[in-house]
Amino acid sequence: MSATATSLQTEYAFVLPRGYVSDDGTVHREGVMRLATARDEILPLRDPRVRENEAYLSVVLLARVIVRLGTITDVHAGVVETLFAADLAFLQDLYRRINQEGHTLAAVTCPSCGHDFQVDVAGDAPGGS
Image (cartoon, rainbow, N blue to C red; front, side, top):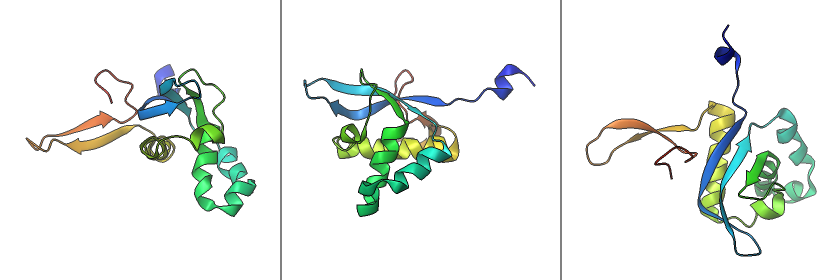
């Protein structure tokens, strides 16, 4: 096997639709999410916040797998819970895509001409979101 056939992408760059606004007013849009491990999916189930409110699971889970958000490298649940709803939905979809489907591509159709093509929903490619 060649080196490229055995390599595995474990981190995915992304650009948030709106961005996280830190306490100093800086907007952080670019980030990196890593693949989740079994431990990442199991440990949040023991978290008291998740036991009290199952909807909090995605907040804790995303906080475990987001490696960087702008200049922030300590992405914790407090950061994730203050994201705009559009950014949270984007990250939940990205998580699902990279961990279940193995990629960040989405099939789309041009509403004007009907042409089918793929876009990288992570948004880090030239011309991305």
